[in-house]
Amino acid sequence: MKIFRFAGLLAMVGSVASAQVASPAAPIPTNVLRPDGPWNVDYAPDECRLIRAFGKDDKQIILRLARGSGLREFDFVVAGPSIPKLQLRLSGAIRLSPQGIEQKSQGYSMPLPNTKMRFVRFYDLDTSIFHSITGSQILEVTADKAFSVSLLLTGSHAAIDALNTCYDDLLVSWGLDPAKLREPKFLPTPTGNPGNWATTSDYPKEALRNNLAGEVRFMVIVDEQGKTRDCKVVHGSGVPMLDQTTCSLILRRARFKPARDASGNAMVSYYVNRVRWMIPND
Image (cartoon, rainbow, N blue to C red; front, side, top):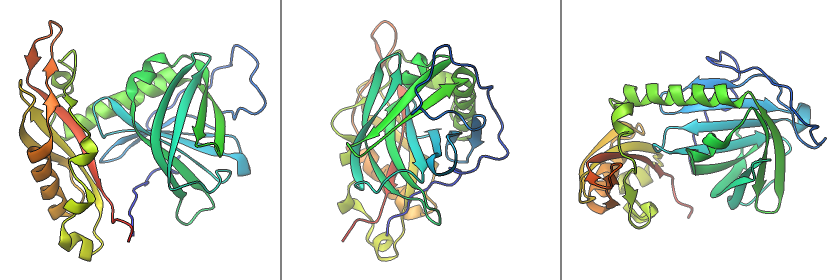
């Protein structure tokens, strides 16, 4: 069994922020889905989610952008009844037009429980793409060669600002100082593949026997030599042994290129990420 957390994906009621739909400056192709309601920000305990619906009925697509994993990363989800059955693991991309800016990513696709919808999820995309968003543009989403959809983004500036404000509030709730985290000109960069810090072979045996899974969000202090000084679970999985195993592995295995200030000097900084513990396939 694998456990995926998508609470709030369909929670379009009770929004705390919204943006007006602006009129596009140029004709929009007929295959582009237009917004069906405002942007909504969901203040979840473990992440901040920006949600909006596009199109109607069997063509409707729900877009969700979520911040909470890394300081400069976000997760991307589209869900809807028109998404076909795809490979569990897949490659895809998001592209902004007319800017011509594209980010490629690895992801996965699954059905949403108790609905007729499926979703496509890309994780750990770079938030730098937010800086390129204008008042109105088209977002194209592709997954392998089997799925493609285009969405008309409007009112995006206010929506992204609301998402970022939510994320700062989330960091504060975790006991972190957003201003302090933004001090370095260059954040610490992992050396090697962070996916090797915690592997299937590290799964606690008791957790495997009891089908216990979850996601652990952690923060480490990275010193001037790129070594980890401390690890703190900022939002646990609900399974203490997974939380403890995560920090133990990160402290042993994680190494970084240190953060640097505007003059290029190495400095102490912080790194925030997560480990997803999912029961492996037999």
